[in-house]
Image (cartoon, rainbow, N blue to C red; front, side, top):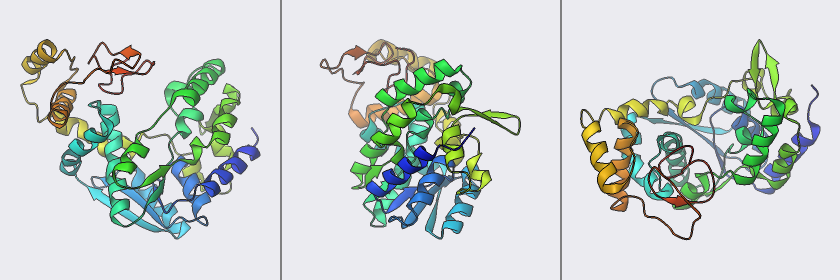
Length: 314
């Protein structure tokens, strides 16, 4: 497979057009590409959120930030710190779905720190996995299925980072969401998204090849870890579930009867308790929106995944 020269040019242009002061920096492929392109285009601060002693992201982020000679803040957080931030996050994104909360609480912590340091703009790596088949459920499929999924994401994906940023007075941008990059990705054949490396199948081949020689191989061919895994926030799942104790079955049955909300497990219940405290009750239906979730009866846009409770498929 040959390098995608057009993609490198498009990404360079996307970074140059929307310069930012800071970056939420995991040290994964996506943010490593953005940070490297942004080094001479206004980047002053990289923030990495680390939960626990040695989360997977940390060594990658530290090594690349050092080589780029950019100010790097490692924001150490405990699980209790994350738990304390959840009501503020829930108020912004209006969700009690664990997938969103475990990932977005890292974004919340990072953006709050960036704002506290006086920065008003921030890059992220949002969109790269959706557009270039970074997830295993994408790159393990046939080329035709990859193309269909990428095009669907290109038309429908949205991220909570900008809304969280607005709450802290920070503009959040991802170069991967630049219209030129999105159009380029949507036009690529599915087979071009996948490569084999050291016996492993992986997605995002166009990005890995386009930036070969610019990034260290360890970053170029790093496996995909979701934000919650790379940061260490994934352990929040068990931490919040433990707050429920033996109350799950009875409380979930009561909530189903009184609020008409289906609770899946102890973690989900803990988040729903917080959601109810923040909003004063169960999700409110918006009759102007076209689709109702059978799990929580919130209404939203057409789609297969409820952004309020996480029910799938709907």
